[in-house]
Length: 463
Image (cartoon, rainbow, N blue to C red; front, side, top):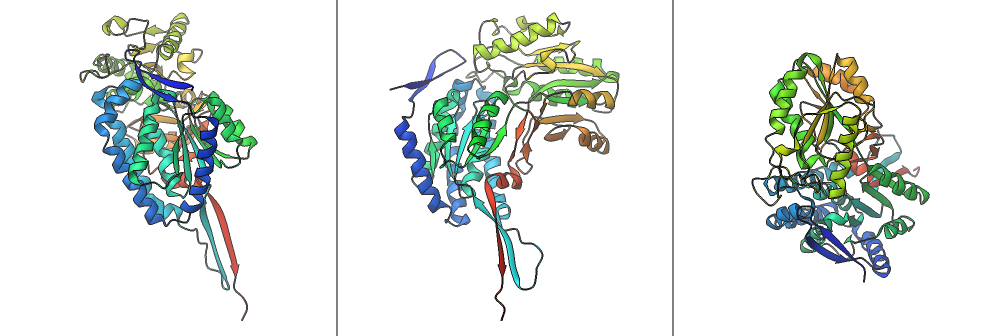
């Protein structure tokens, strides 16, 4: 029997160990999902909503177990770990509330002698491949609306956060989900690839790296499957001279370093109008130095380890490359004793004298390091913000809403933020452009990705 271990980045201990699903178990799960979905699609929406609401309640009832479990699995401090479940609940309950309107038939203008409408029909069996960095939030984005829309779901969670997938399974069972409607399967890469070739699987939702999304998206396309792909980011921010610098610094430090920077929409590069560059930088650094790097199970810790030593080393390499090309680091790692240079614990870092030759300003960092550069004006800021193969979010900090809207129209991004960052509003579509992905989740638009239109063109019989 092949098993999969979950190893904590905090201390190297084994958090959990699970058996890999056998091919026979995968086959049984797909067959059961297809059977369950054929019945579930006929269940009234009100009943589907009751099941999903019970699932959300069952998950929230496990809060006291979930927060320390997250700390052990992926290093997020218990001091902030409850926020993940808060976001989980917000997104789930919003999608429950939006379901009736989003799934209602689309009725065009009346035409005498005809009945015409477009019905939203479920796709069938939806395969959700979820990442470790926001393991509840990313999974709920797809699982809840997929079920509400009448689909069955197979969840493949990341190895690092397999206990999260098990929490989803337990909560579904406690909510009374029909047998076969939801599965959490512990799968190998090869088994995922084979699922994408199985004609009983109807749609893929993937959150992860650009390389992973390109590979799985290509496999899905060969089977003519639809695919939602939420991929990487190199999200920029621009600070204009009219903004409150204390406010902007506070927001952007959190946007850059929360979750040790391990977020697809973390702020990874900041452009500051040169008139306020120095005072902004001073405020930013003062707040960075407030972090306490340490054991994520310690309530005093505000910055935990990265997900692995290898992940931390990739960030270290990016920092070293930037310094070799002329950048300067402004934080001495010695200020954060937990960072010994040879573990998953990595001190937050701020770099200046940076430019777009450097990977730190060009490629996804996915860690607690950010480059900050001065710009002469709005034009230079927009040009640099768009100078990226990614386009997930972009944040503007200014008092002038009209200017922000005008600049936002020119930004190549899925979401434009004003005076905030690193947040998903579940009533707005979460989407990306360029290498940040395809498709959308959340909002009414998210339901469109998990259903197919079916038109009814009914001509009345002449009397």
